[in-house]
Length: 159
Image 1: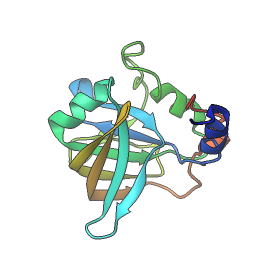
Image 2: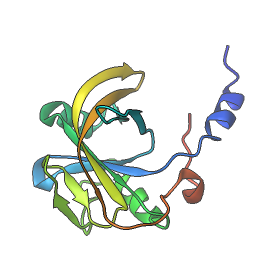
Image 3: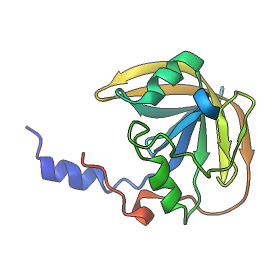
């Protein structure tokens, strides 16, 4: 039996970097704020990220087989919150967000610190999420700075 309070307390000690995962889709693409991302391999360069099983993103990821990870900068809490909203209830959440298309067709955030564009190499069920493995096919640095973290934003998962 899991001690729910202990589990929440320990998981909230993990200090994640916040990113915006984007993918091609209608009206210039789609995306969401995420923090469960990690480097998975050096050669070939690979990363992992997750998508909620009931999200709009999961269908687009499976259809297009590409995604981009845009690293948010310290101080971009408002942007992280805006893009973290459900597209079902906030279909215009990308309004006013400057992007350009990447080599994969994924929208890339112009105000991010940097980005990785990835081709989906695999996926694995992970409870209420699906874990995607992506091979990095392009990367760019937009500016220097510290990344936005969960600790800075005060955001918390219910977990």
